[in-house]
Image 1 (cartoon, rainbow, N blue to C red):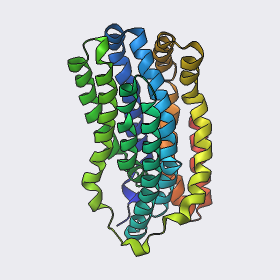
Image 2: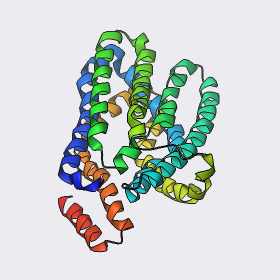
Image 3: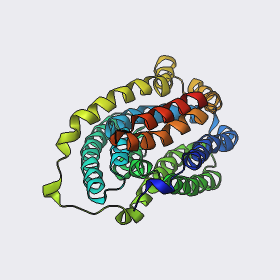
Image 4: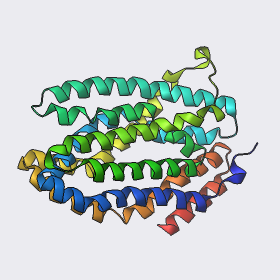
Length: 294
């Protein structure tokens, strides 16, 4: 059955934009409460520790998100091929994640407040079970958005019910990372509908290493301007107070960027689908439409 016929870029864009806006609005809805309960120092402590953890998450994911989404878009209509790509990609992600978890655990225990660091290990476990790239490659953005809305709402309720004092920062860190893990794990519930296990003899994940690493390099560059600033503030000022104010202002300034990045996410699998079929005129048409929109 043709998967492409049922997909709408406009609808997928709305789905993804809804999710991205929700991702931004969630911390904005909880920011006044957390600012009052945790204080600037508490918010700043979370911002700094989360930025440090994100480097380990970066190495755990490598270039898998972009690679997996692109490769699945090439074989949307071939169940056998997409099953092989799915499992090969997951094997690479598993090994990268396990190495990152070991490194992060060692890094966490050298700090005096190691408890605050170690609870964010769920962010790395979330990478292991994250297969959202697979559904993005199939252009099933509705499934992604629905899950994210559910778990975002649960997280909001958790914050208002559990976080009552500055000492509860560890629960805030735990809740944020644990619900991310549960969200990603929930994708596996319906995966049998889309893929089979072809057997280990048919799998050769090593053939993708060069491509995955080539896609990993621009991801590092992105990390420089999305996370490094928070880490630098924490290191230079040695003050969680400074990071607390910066974190809240940054959330507001990046809201409009969501409108642009949401389109790019839904365009990648569609362009990949037509690129694999040598339909260069269609690819060019989609790219120029995207440029005009931006």
